[in-house]
Image 1 (cartoon, one colour):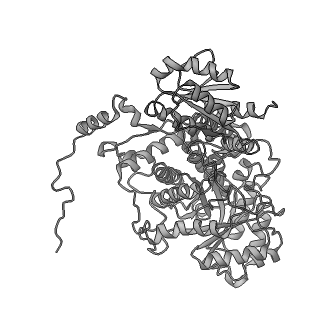
Image 2 (tube, one colour):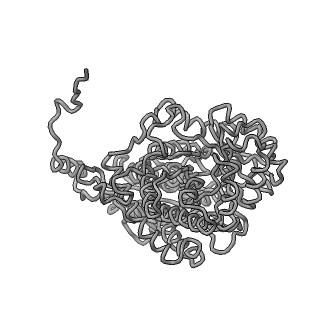
Image 3 (tube, one colour):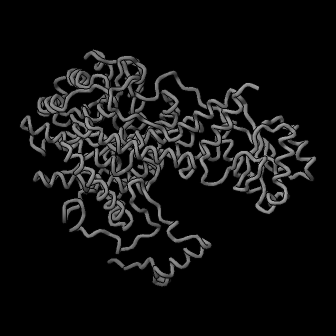
Length: 610
């Protein structure tokens, strides 16, 4: 016999107006709208959702009356392996790559993705069947999926892997050939044609019934700086292009879907990433419904490369954990966590161990896979997923009106979308509207970076084909300044005015800002007795640059005179933390200013010969 247990007993019924009243009180005069975030597609992310916000199932973008967004085809998942833990391998030597693969399998990963690069700059040097036989030696392909990422010659690598599998193992071999001509095109690579990829799938499905042959990978949009709706639209349009190519060869929509792996990037915003994956399932269900097919989407999530930083790389562990959490709760069938040092080069065993253990801990200790659809029914997740799907669907239609994704790429339609969103991201990072811990805020100038083998951090070709979407890292512009600063040992003197309580807030702000460009801030906590002491401290610092720090009242009384005295004492450039202006003050530093531009100006001054 069960007894009802009222979790909310003892609490008064919540009232939305009362909650909003308390929220506005906490904002201390700021508008309530400040709590409402917004994606780059204009989709609002509200601080509170209620049952009113939950979409009507009959009006959702997915198939009415169904739940296409739950993980995979089964309502009950393996409690011990709720998603496939996949790890990438870039070790150039095939034999060493095989040993790395076996080592990773022994320590908890359940599948492997070999990055193939004939040059060895960013992947395994493998092209012949014998090379692939070495790669998969000792791997039970009926248990552990072997996947490929072969941008230089995807079809050749797929054929070589297929031939490398013993004939007796082919019926049970779990392979992912991952032929994706459209992602190759977006990455500026030759790849293979859609027709050739579909032809390989048609020939291979009977031989390898447990394998997937095709991939619809929207990561180039994400890595290029695109938005969630743009990434979703390209994902679905890529899937549609594969359906058309398969249909031309006599493959049914169900047959193409069964051999197709969808791949999205997973960023650090847990809420948005959960919603994005649920939106992807809604959208694809709508496409399949139009084809008369009711089948699940097989979805892989790979932690974002653009969020990876070279400076303070250990913060990447936190970013990857958030991304993995969002991917798992969002229902990904396969998850790949990039090592925290992947932006620096080839990851060592420590970085790889942390990457795989991130997934294992979320599976085995946090039990994320014990609930089939953990976000299902949550008003926030349902509403945000539907909003993202609604934002993406018109973009899918625009791609289709252009003639499909191949034609849209030829016309530069998708590239223009991504470029526009990328420019907005760059502006927000420069102004620190988007904050990157360890990069444009809270930089650690005393860090010692981990040593990594000399290998390219990306498989993007040195000379990509026209029409490629260039990848980015959000931290790259600030890190470029840090690289310039490394050879200068730059510093700036913070000329604090008045009492500590008056200048500490702006001094902290100025230090945080200048050190994001590798410029050491001196005198942050020093209160000077008079102007003579201030000038003496400036001369003792050996700095050429100065930033005045104080409150508004102190600026009115002292800033002009102090700036003139500092200029007379040898200061070559004077900033002021705030918006107060005076003849001897050259530039202003304040919240909302283009911090990257200010730092670039400072570094350029210091690079000029005396």
